[in-house]
Length: 311
Image (cartoon, rainbow, N blue to C red; front, top):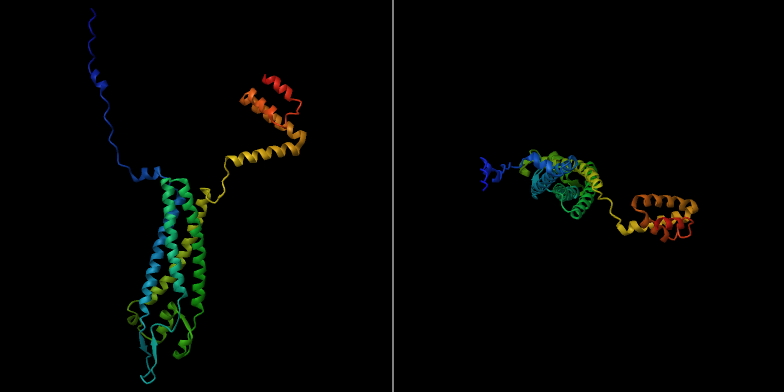
């Protein structure tokens, strides 16, 4: 009777599963490599964040500027109570067009930047193509509209500010329209000293910050629009019409018929040679049947030879 072989030392260790390796926590470098972050999408992200901050600052300055017009009347220095010469802190004819334009562009900039950030986030996370395409079209349209609106409002503000004029007499101020910035920074300080104590804050600085923020918004909007156009072109977002398989087959059939009719015998010879190449590559029997079934080749003298070869 055969004796069982002695077990080898450490043979039981072969049945033990190896210990799992400790999992390292994901780092920022690994996360960046695993996502679809590109320099272009990062530029869109950074520009959108800056545009949100600049638009928010502009809205805060414009809203804070409203507190300067508190319907207070200040007596003109050097005049008596009998003359009754008082200068109001709020002009009689106030041109609020630049202020409304600043608020409109700032609000539109925040909305555009938020949509652009959502689009970039979907690109980084590789979301569904249909959803990303809709966001890309929306961001593309909003950025172009915001750029056009920012440039138009910026031009209007500079034209409106340069068209202001100072009347010679205070009594003529009732017949002249002033913008907020011109009245706070030029008209009112020309007659009253130490105007900040009447406003309660540095109103002129807030008014000037609002206009310079508009210049920054127009510049950032141009950069954002250019980046969105390039990114949309890379993602084929600007191609709104996509051909399906049936359209391709119809187009191929029309092109085949046109070549057979327009080129005559030469066209038939070329297509016969192409069909012969497909016969050599794909099998003789099936391709020969296609050739004999096609109406162009039914009357061809080589059909008989093709049938013989196929049989």
